[in-house]
Image 1 (cartoon, rainbow, N blue to C red):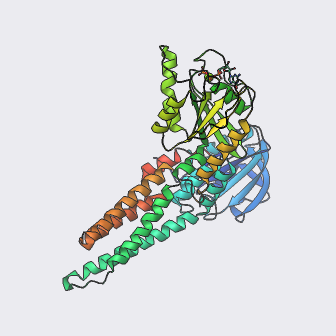
Image 2 (image 1 turned 90 degrees about the vertical axis):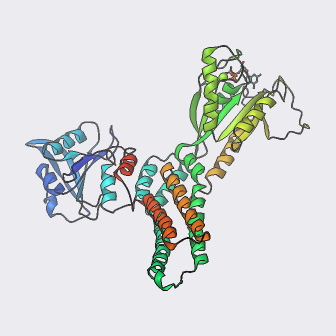
Image 3 (image 1 turned 180 degrees about the horizontal axis):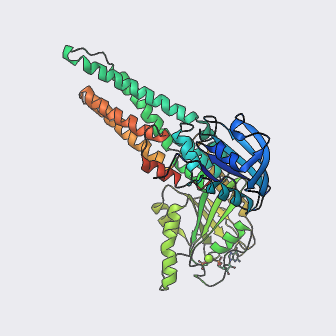
Length: 454
Ligand SMILES: Nc1nc2c(ncn2[C@@H]2O[C@H](COP(=O)(O)OP(=O)(O)OP(=O)(O)O)[C@@H](O)[C@H]2O)c(=O)[nH]1
Ligand SMILES: [Mg+2]
């Protein structure tokens, strides 16, 4: 068990060379302890909250640095505790010296995410907001940053509080009627209750639709390149990246492992994956590579199938059929490559969308990039107030399930008690989203993804 009565400290800015570094200290006794090493015009313990103080840090008589200390008094701080943020000069050494100095006088190094954990335990933010902090810091695009920022201000938390209240009211009514059961009175409008429960289920289900989009916002849109050997996958991969990243050769089976690179199309991070060509082969390494392809395509949001049009424009039809049936919910586009070797016959009608390119000559690449962008945008378009993660999805699914059970129980004219138990379980489950109900396991899981200083 970690001791929560000792002030904690950590570097809040990234380690390395920079103008300034910020060291956070939080907890009971913070001002007294920092005052032991800080000499300014006044003692920090006497300072007003939200004020900044210039002064010097000494290790006994040795001057370490000139710094400013920002003072935040409980409960008006990030953690809800007394906090001092020491801004010293940047670099690897100074901040470390100050942290070591603090530790030598009774401060403890913070665990990963411990500042935010304290903020949660002190009621400064709920779990949705805690997760938004992590997503905000790790955001890889403007859209993911802005969505996390909205999640952080807590609008969604309020919505969940409303839904819980709605369910609690229903339970109270049902349980009240139960108290009068001897007298055979019935004053609860069951169909009205069903409607209200239905509203909560609809809301949970509507949020669940953001799962895919959230995943894309968190880790980027994933595009897998597939095709037979020598169709030009690696050449196309290089053309997208605009650099010679993958080895290209006329020998079939050149790519055996897979390659992944992230490019930005406009402001959108897109993860492009070049894979081994799919064919029957005896080569053990190539077989391993081909096994990988399935796994990679399964993770991809979009699959681009490269066909060598110089062989024939329908040379990959078998592969296209396979991929479409294996991954029916994926965006698939067919790319006819090597048009420099063969004129395009535009009058042919196909039942799939095709692009015509020369990967080698970098012809037709922009149009494909635009298409990837458009498709990715559609997937993330409706994600607005929450970046849904697996924890949220599981909770929403479970809560819906309990509420559906409650509706069933009403339809089967079961006792109020039975209906109420299902709803109460749903309330408890939903409470886990914001952390109204939580366990140490849930917290550990969430904070293990944080780094020290957050
Ligand atoms: N003329 C022409 N040749 C191309 C084009 N794209 C690729 N090639 C050639 O086709 C051959 C195979 O290209 P790669 O990019 O290595 O093909 P791959 O699909 O990655 O092949 P594997 O990794 O073996 O599966 C090379 O000789 C390329 O130069 C193109 O647009 N036009
Ligand atoms: Mg290749």
